[in-house]
Each structure stands twice: as structure tokens, then as C-alpha cells.
Picture 1: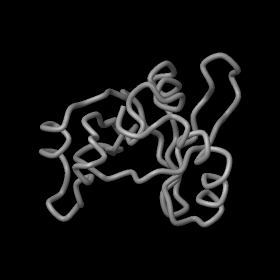
Picture 2: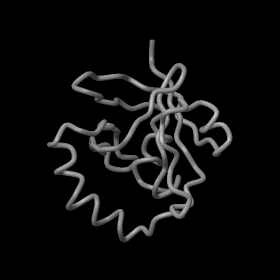
Picture 3: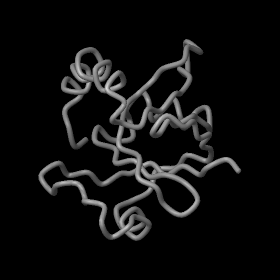
Picture 4: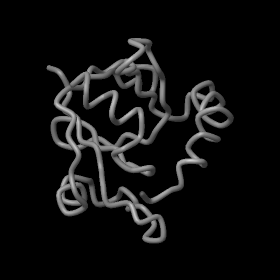
Length: 123
């Protein structure tokens, strides 16, 4: 796992609410696997052919990733517009980097991010 889980818990409680309110980040709305409650997670979502790609900073074991994978769908809010996404799948570095536009900065190597979530836009 690239980033320690304890940092993710701090982000969830302290920084994420501010990031959502700022409107500067895409926000993924997903449903909890056990609770059935809606959750909102701010993130960088990069457009790729037919969908979006997200760097999995905390790895594929993160609760939000597991929620989206279990539901098979979610909603991204980007610049005030809602986009329904489906078919979430974890992809590796080679597939992710091939899909990303050349001008998108790759994650810094010290973060050791090797997993990415790709989702298709519902048409």
C-alpha cells in the first residue's frame, strides 16, 4: 500500500470535508457495502477514452474503492456536473499511463502508486 492507512483516516475526517466544500476536486458519491449509506470522496479524476481514471493513493483496499467495486457504479461530480460511472476495475500502471493524456502528471515515484481505478461513463 503506497500511503499509510492512518493518513487516510486523517484525510477522511479533517481534509476531505474541506476539499468537498472547496469545489476544486471531483467528488465521487458511492454507497457503503454494509451500511447502504451514501458517501462522498474528493479525488482527482482524469478523463480517459470513455470514462475516468483515478490514482489509488491508498491502494485498492480502501473502503471507497471496495464500495464502488461492490456496487459496480457510482456518480462523479466534476465542475458541478454529475456523471454516472460504471464497470469499475483496477488496472495497472502500464494500462493507466497508456490511457492518460500526455499532459497529465504521473504520480511521484516515492508514492509507489501501482494501482488505478478505471470507470466507464454511462451513456
